[in-house]
Length: 357
Image 1 (spheres, rainbow, N blue to C red):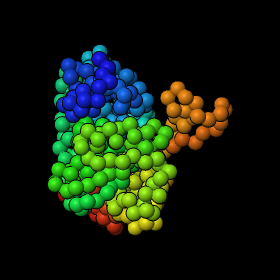
Image 2 (image 1 turned 180 degrees about the vertical axis):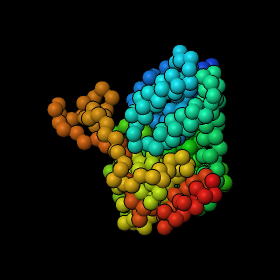
Image 3 (image 1 turned 45 degrees about the horizontal axis):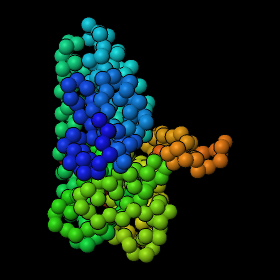
Image 4 (image 1 turned 180 degrees about the horizontal axis):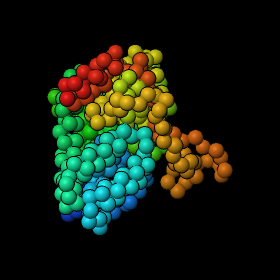
């Protein structure tokens, strides 16, 4: 049932988790309704999960990775296949449908591939169904532990009285729980340091104002909201000490793909000598692709030409609306993971993190 009471959200969001498996169904918080309405949606069909990922009911790289895994688990239960090869074929088709929803975010492919590996290793259709459900649930549980480890590692980089800028939402709502970039901020606060946060509104979907500011305010962290156009102003006027953002894909070379506008933040940070950090789990790393291989998702123009039901642009205007941009490694001071912190030269340090995994 929808709830529009903020205290209700505060009490229940972390206990329910952003996405979870219950009674052979996938339950999600509908993030398109936040912060005004807290609404839980329940899905029993993998096509519904695919649509939820596509329409940003669930978003954030780790969260959609787990959601994709849950989607395949639903597909295994949906199929009436009685032979292993039939069920594997059904799952491969479901995987394709789920993957095509958000092609830039590598966690989605990671989650789908993990479930297909489990399915292929099982000997019978009953074993496939049991194993994929259990493994998907385990992935969700591990996500929170990974984020808390990442937060602890990253908190050492931030000092008492720092003001930290973040872009988009890389918090509990972008993961199963706790968060990546906001997990680092939470862990820094929990370590006893006094910090402030500046959150960008993150147009056109406003994940910063709708979600990040919402989460931080709930946690009692001093947060100020700025328009995306005030990023340079904030740094030029000494309002920011450090920056931490999340990521949807990180290449072995240290190239980072994150919400559109991240590159601008990183460029301004370099100009003003403000350390720029990225926080992401190892599941977000793509160790095979080169920058020219990465597909940048292009979203519908209506996200830019209006806010809610209100039009803000003339009819028929052409729109360029990429969901992500690429931040080159020379703008990044460090990449925070659950296994440690990668620093330049990134190709070497990232490789060492995987060797330690």
